[in-house]
Length: 164
Length: 284
Image 1 (spheres, rainbow over the protein chains, first blue to last red):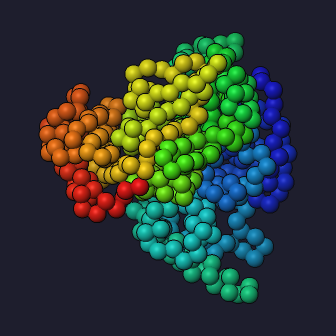
Image 2: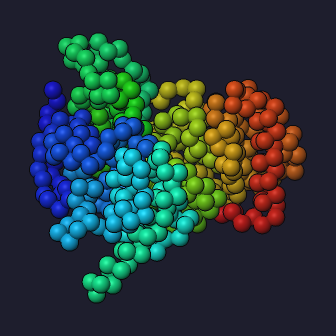
Image 3: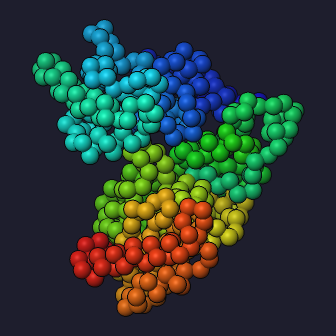
């Protein structure tokens, strides 16, 4: 066994420090050590997007990120999106508009849309389609997911106004 | 960025210490090295079985597929690999520049707007944020697009090797492995200000075409998907259809016949040259 690597990062707002084998993939750390099974494991090759998390705000597939490389970063997962006020606006939008069928790709889609709306609070259809092309859904044909993203933009704006 | 030359998949018996079997999709144990400079990275990678890693979008799937890795040399702290420079003539792009940064960088846009425009189209948003120009080149994947663009643009690949430097053309990588420990440091495009670059990926994955015009010379690069990019050089006044006859190799496969691909290359090249003659909107 090679030398363990020390990693310190924040996952869903909680600071964590770990000693891990260098070959540990972020997805395995999140699921196997932290029990964050909402971060879905699927293709394992960075293609499908089911395991998408945000690393310092940018979407990344946790299956193609070595955990050591996340040292010092802030990681957000689907498991931390809801808070004591309830589901996030993006989660509410997906539930409201039926942006899922089997639900397996949904956590990745929701993280992707969360990142999209932070960069583009009022995205046009081209931007939504472009961003969503990072993830695969084999059930819905995408239309309901696109509608969910549009609705998520509205709900996010409403939440923002309500807080002001 | 991962140079996997010389670290081809190993047999299961040799993939794990003591002959123990790894999980099917497991990643072998490796020593991790995190250098801060190119020189230190090259030294670290001079041991047999060493692999460079930057974005890891290609590397991790390859490791899951059984590629060997005794030492993983992480390039994340080598900041010189993420620099972009433009001196008014030569455009220099560090090998660890990710697609999103490179495609939107003011120096790239100023030096060669056609490259910036084309670069923005490749991969999806998530991959663009993480994958690097160096990885795209060193992966040696036939459907990847930067080798096509860079071959047309006459780019040079600048490697740091033990004891010195090595310069290769993009096409060289398809025919010869990089020397052990060679680290792609930067991509340079000489005389970029004199270059017009156009790109058409509308028939991807079956075909991509890049056309570069410098003075009276046009350089055509076609990525047929089934083979490394094919290159041809001619006068800008030549008929694009005739230009395709200069492309070497067999461009046909089960996906598209030789005749179809050559015809399609001619059509796409002709459109790009019309753009050049008409608006020159992509000129640097």
